[in-house]
Length: 93
Image (cartoon, rainbow, N blue to C red):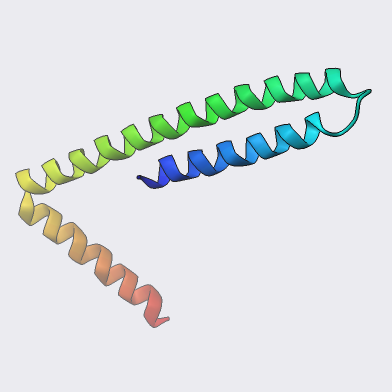
C-alpha cells in the first residue's frame, strides 16, 4: 500500500466519522446533516482522485529520472557531486 493510498484511506475514515457525528447531532438538523454528508462524500471522492493522480505523477517522474540517469550516467554523477558539494558548504556554515 503506497503512502497516497494510506492517506486516502485515513481521510475516508475521518470523513465517515465526521459524517456520523453530524448525523447524530440532532433531530432538527437532519437536513443539514444530509447536506453535510453529501458534501463530505464528494470531498472524499475528490481527495481519493487527487491522491491517485499524485501517485501516477510520482511514478512517471521516478521513471523519467531513472531513464535520464541511464542515458547520461556521467552527467548525473556530476550533478549529484555538485549538489553534494553545495549541501556540504551550507552545512559547514
